[in-house]
Amino acid sequence: MPAQRKKILICPLSWGTGHTTRVIPLISELLNNGHEVIFGGNNWQIEFIKKEIPGIQFISFPGFTIRYSSFLPQYLVILFYFPLFIYHTLIEHIRLKKLIVEHDIEIVISDSRPGLWNRKIKTVLITHMIRIPFPAKLRILENLPLPFSRIAIKKFTFCYIPDFPGEFNLSGSLSHGFHLPDNARYIGILSRFLKEPHALATKKELFCTAIMSGPSPQKEIFTELTSRILKESEEVSTIMAGIPEAEFIKREGNLITYNHLTNKEMLNTIMHSKIILSHSGYTTVMELFSIGRSAILVPTPGQAEQEYLAEYLSSKGWFKTIKQKHLCKEVLTEYIEPLLPDFPAEENKKLLLTALNELFET
Image 1: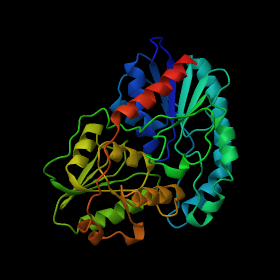
Image 2: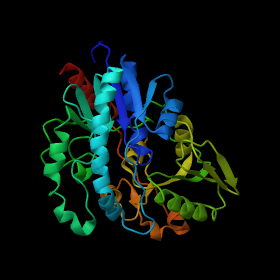
Image 3: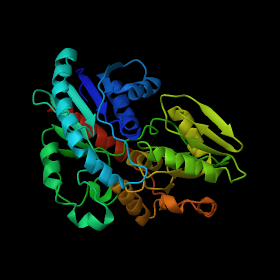
Image 4: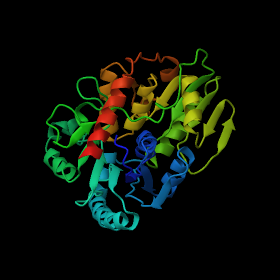
């Protein structure tokens, strides 16, 4: 990347922690190349990034948040919230204009916030969902919204897809198998663990590490179910509760629950665990894949994207999957971890650098 210093605003979506954690490697790369980064988000996102990347500037720029249902399919909840999402997208677009002037912003990079484009400066949208997933029975209709996705994406200078091009990929039909918008670029896997040295532990002291993610109340429902199952084991297990705003450790018998761990602590815990259990959120999948760990993926019930990803990744033999209602102790004790293909670190780095070079040169 050129040496000319740019002031860049980074703004991820706040639905769960995944969108926030996956901008960490991007922020690190920009800082390493001498650029000034401003992070915009809500309170918990700001506190989370402060712990991982201290010293950068922060501004309050909350995005739209959603609360899933404990009984309705999540696609119905999203459909219900859609008019409100459109309203907030327009409000964000208007507020961004003011922030650009107030802070002399030269580039905006947003993760899954389609309102953060501007005609006067360069803007980038990060998303792995060009094609919006539908429930299994309605997947024949998934191509219908594609023209609307293209219209939204073309408002940005570039669209960054965190994945690999070609058959070797993690997102499947969400971003492959159709003609992409001209400004779309694959940038490789975004994982905060790539900057950390890691090796598979020869001795696994932990039985299972369960990673909680996603919006409430489904995260809490999954946490309660997982806690009950792990307490049945005589071996020590951990739950990463995914509550970055609260540092708290609780131990109940053989089960240790962490509200939040640093990247290094989280990586070390994962590498010393026999089994990884998680929702099939895309960021979690990217992070596990980047360190060569597979997992049992449990899609959030009624969440079409997670159901598709779990099905797609299990069909490739890279991950195992099971419905939440079928999760039990026997599933864990009978689990044999799939062997993942080698992670192409050099290609991954090249894809990101190529995309960033094009951004700064155009």
